[in-house]
Image (cartoon, rainbow, N blue to C red):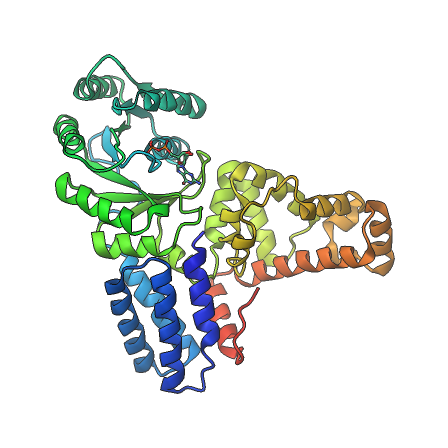
Length: 447
Ligand code: GDP
């Protein structure tokens, strides 16, 4: 997730050997500019951002910390578009949302994800109306999705979109639904017929808000189409789907600055649980490669129970994360979605996500090795990684058929990960990280 932008920031930061002079700053800015353009950020936005970062850094006094602060502030400002955040409920239920987007953007999947989010996290009674009658497979797809997530569906293949919406809304009112999500027709590209149909549906539905689902993989195209939808039918929020793929991170900046509609949620995987509320500051952290411990904990909480997630997060903070927790995590990660999207959330691991492109959790050699190693440990050793002295390591190595060197390597990785997680998980985490980066004269990014 976000790798292109994260990589660029990382390399820009590395480039700065700040001897506190303007030449170093210029070099860093040039690097940043190149990488922003590569990440598909519109040149106008890049120009503005660079000018702002330069101005702010100079005002604060040239240095690595000041450069990072300026970047953070400027990115936050771009992503913080005025308007509603997350999901907003209407004063009088049901809250009616029109879900729009091009075919293949992930609109139908996202409608299901949003319904699950409202049902599970907000404890709301949700009805989905299948008004995408252009593509009958879409109705069938919604039927499968709603059965899986146990959310009600109103569908009628024989009716017109307007009729379906009317009947669905009546049903919602009569049965006291809290939220109605209307899945509207999509096309491969914007055309007049599509817009006419959407306008008709909009008139009947009188939605509280219109969400536009934008496919992050389509870069500047997503920005252009979102602008068109905004002009023609008016949109109140954007949900950015497929932000877990090879999406260029810049699209979030483009949508925020060029379309000027708040991003509300991001889709980060194919599973129904893979939807997150869009929080600008969190995204800025991730864009800058600082990770997102909170997001990770929330994702975990969606699939395992909240109590357990809190316990684990507490353990990480106390530096007491042990092998049993690790196995627990492995089990729940299987349910959680791609490893790659999770890696982006772990501090300092942003870079790793690229290496994990097609990482197959259950069949990877590394995970198998760790599991075999843990299986050869005594219960006490699993509880307390510090117990592992050389004698114990030798025994474990023999038990799991690994060399001692391999055992040491795996242990070291485990300890480093636990240490990093602890260091950056507290409230002070970001400040610590920035201070540490300030100290690292020669560059080099924490891994
Ligand atoms: P629609 O035509 O706009 O309704 O698109 P669909 O909902 O059918 O989605 C198209 C494809 O994108 C499907 O294969 C989905 O599984 C996939 N998809 C949707 N959202 C995401 C996402 O956030 N991440 C990933 N990796 N795939 C997604």
